Image (cartoon, rainbow, N blue to C red; front, side, top):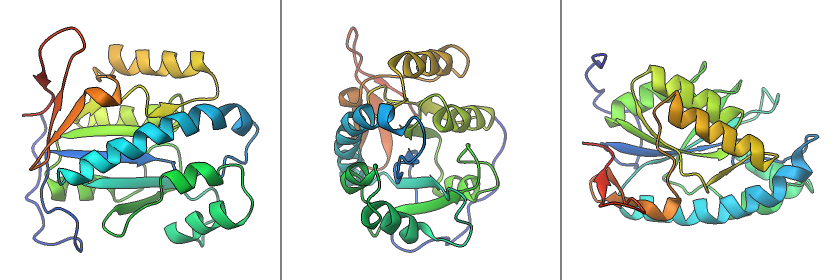
Length: 217
């Protein structure tokens, strides 16, 4: 594993100072106003409900939750402007955004392209927090989640992508993307219910066929 630079003394306000695990929510603040939006909506709402519960459990254990979102070409907007656009402009994704509204102690990163790492401050933030394992969720599995997972893999993060907290426009695309993450990126794709966040920021994954194993150490 590549060596990491010493963590900065202070980078933020009131989110956790140090955690082995972070929950990264990719493009969940999403108006779904694109050609495949109607096909994505139903699956995204089902995934969003499970992601809401996963986030609640993560925060209860002190695991930082990081929203990484497209600016959708709105180069002068900030994150709150994205939220308000989705809720107030009659967008297709309003119900999804209402499910997953950010809280004051969450982190926010705007990204210009598909990957959460490309030309963003995410690497610096994760380094500061001491994160080793990323739990990735959001939309879509076969696009921005896959690009983000690939960039995380080459940066030596352990990957967990709960298979029921993300979605794509088709079931086939979703499953093929998850298969790639398992086979090529060595990620784990358990259901969200199998994840247990431990106070202090570590993560355990309960296998449906074997004893509980630890995904980060």
